[in-house]
Amino acid sequence: MAIQAKQSSWSLILLLVVAGGLWLKEQMARPDAVGGVVQTAEGWERIEGCRWIPHDRNDGDSFHVRFPDGREEQIRLFFVDAPESARRSYGGGRSNHERISYQAKAFGIDDDAAVEVGRMAKKKVESWLGDGDFVVVTRWEDPFGDRRFSALVELDSGEWLHEKLVKEGLVRIYTKGTVMPDGTSIEEQEKHLRNLEKAARAHGVGGWSSREIHQVR
Image (tube, rainbow, N blue to C red; front, side, top):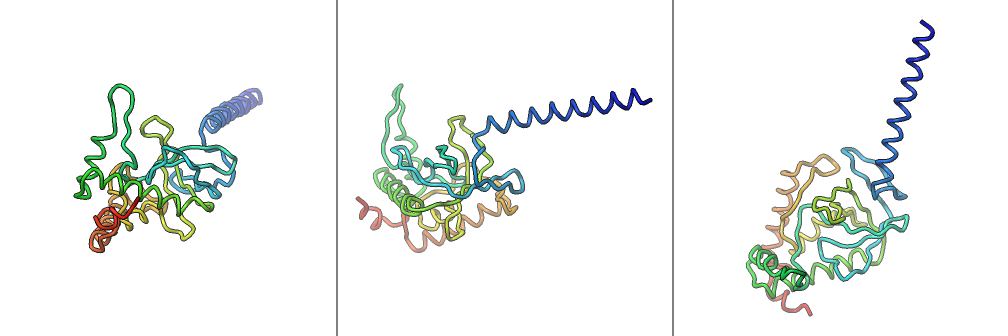
């Protein structure tokens, strides 16, 4: 009986060691082993002390971030899509021109005006994030396999960046959503964003104001 108990104990220890090793391997492979991380419900990680990094591929909804340990990653905001801030051509005859046309239609403006809105969004995000620390909340999802990690960004004011962009009329409500860290459902959050967008349209701000668009240089 004692022998069986001893064997069971060793089996349990071995199982725990293997499980611990697998967990550690998974954690080391993730790009989230950074300082200042607070684990929250639903698998979210709240990372304070993040910094915006200048980069030629930054846009209003996608930009490079330096995390507290010095690691640099690109994040992509949930829920919103900012117009492209420049026309780009890629290899194989590909370009972002068709995407710009879709973005322009969302605002009811022409393609040139949509690019101007994209530039406005990029400049606004730089002005909001470029001079101080901010909070990134993420689960390190990489939906496109290009190391653009889906995330939420919290400003010093406590406001979510994607909501502020909607208020300013600088993005369309489009792309991947998520249940919010406080448990707000995707449907509830999208309804809230639609109300913010409705107010932005009523006040003629950002992409909803041709006058403001053409003032941007």
